[in-house]
Length: 241
Ligand code: ARG
Image (tube, rainbow, N blue to C red; front, side, top):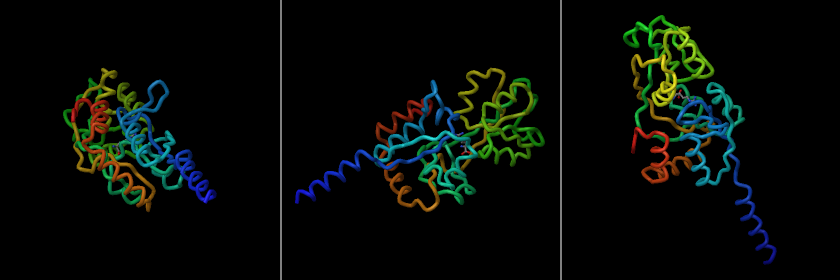
């Protein structure tokens, strides 16, 4: 009997002491979703994932990698999940399993140009050089516009080239674009693009049904709670919901 009790106690202890480690990949240059503040990883996605980790019993271990390296890292098992403001495109759905979306507002994208640009709308970017983040949804939009797509590892690089008139436009997610516009005064909004993809979702390795269900349940329970709403208000104050 004593032995059994000791065994039970040992297993209870080990569960709390050794929570399952979940290696989560992100790309920390996507304000307000994920970014570095004084060298520390923060943002809506980061806080949300930590919250999910607490509820699911995962210890989250963060890996900051380039956006186009995220899905390959998941596929090769270097990470277990991705949270990076990643939209569920049909192409990506073939490569990974997605949770339900964790943000419930429409995603829009800004088409930015230099203040000096003479372009009047996004259609005029046909055959012009458009900077986008490599592997992003915006890359797809630029291709659809018939632009000459210039892929960058970081948005910042693309925006700096736009400031220096090296390229004709940049397509970027709206919230992130507005953040950069606050400091980059030589850029302006030319146009907007709305997409109909389901919103940002957490990606898991193909076949991780159990984890997907666990995360979906937690997301469902978080919806409309103060815990969730406060995060939205903190990082997306303009949404105010
Ligand atoms: N929503 C866009 C996409 O899914 C851009 C996401 C970029 N995220 C990032 N952490 N850099 O392609």
